[in-house]
Image 1 (cartoon, one colour):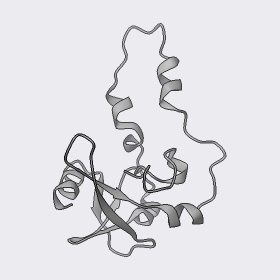
Image 2: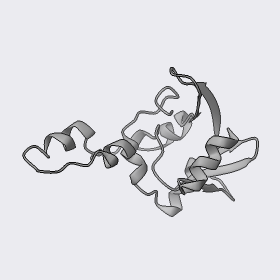
Image 3: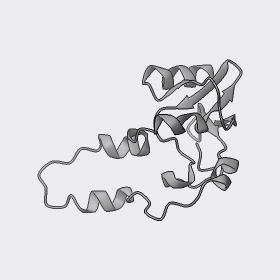
Length: 125
């Protein structure tokens, strides 16, 4: 878990949280190809949030509209929602706990209801 948090801190996806509004547990899940992935369960936060009436477009729709263009970069498609910055006032709502401290996301994490990835733990990682 420490290695994963260190990687996220190095690319400025997370920062240390000071006064969290919500606190989410972190779970380590084994990847199908070996290794581990850190996941957060945002079920309770998603229950408290209202549904966004205008969700973000799906990645396949964005790729379809590029038909006929000369160049296409898949770097943005790879990053998905991690390229969307959180409102600083809302970032501490994404606080998760580790054995080394509390951290919150600076970018949209997977698993938030209005982030397009659902709210259960299987989609939060």
